Length: 325
Image 1 (cartoon, rainbow, N blue to C red):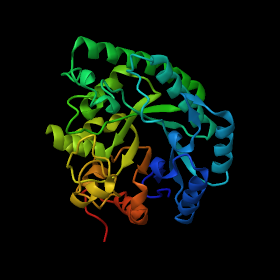
Image 2: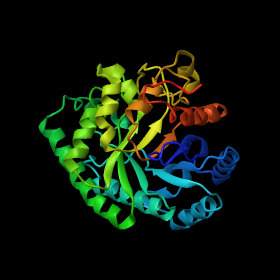
Image 3: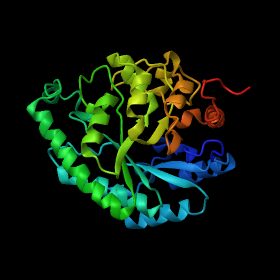
């Protein structure tokens, strides 16, 4: 839905859940139909949901097919790049860089001006439990990590120039923490992510503020959640909204049916279902001028309408923070 009461917010939207779609375009169409009935206007499409990338390259026929499907609807789109892309990768750096460039091309093909990228990881999640990789989980500022930071920075600045040509902005997302991760990604800490974006200082590079991830990190590392939101706000060009209870889980805990009962991990609940102080978050983002994407799991789709309505109400919160009656 578009917001008529706050001119700075372009719109409120929802994600197309990649795990649900899983490359099945019949499921994609079913979900798009449901969102059309809900009168949603803005959707975030995960490239990896569509099956349009294989081996780091776009499948042109599949891209054309997806584009034809998306054009049947009156949605506006943002795009999420495949999660495993990591510009810090030392083994196949060109594969990861090319995959992100291909993701930018996909964005341009479907008319999206925003591409979400999971910020570079010193240790990717898939390596957490490989013994010889775990010894690399060391504190920041090591020689190795400085080299990885430089690799990512150089790649991002190069890709940002492609972004100028394609009219696509790269938005680096703050990372969720894990109990068994050590320090795997600088973007677990939103303050560090903000420093990275300020260092890059490019108009085609900004932050995707993932509210749920930031709340989990605040609980894990003991920083002030709302202070972090206010600190990064000037650099934020895209927002993911979802809720949780701040209870960090390990990387091996993946079954939502089990995590749900005690409210653990990156639940991606609709806002208002967990404990994140969403009213204060909206207040801290009062000058934000992008999209608010409700990034929720498909299993909570029945609650999606409530979350979208709550977003609209919260955009009308007074400066004093009181909800309208």
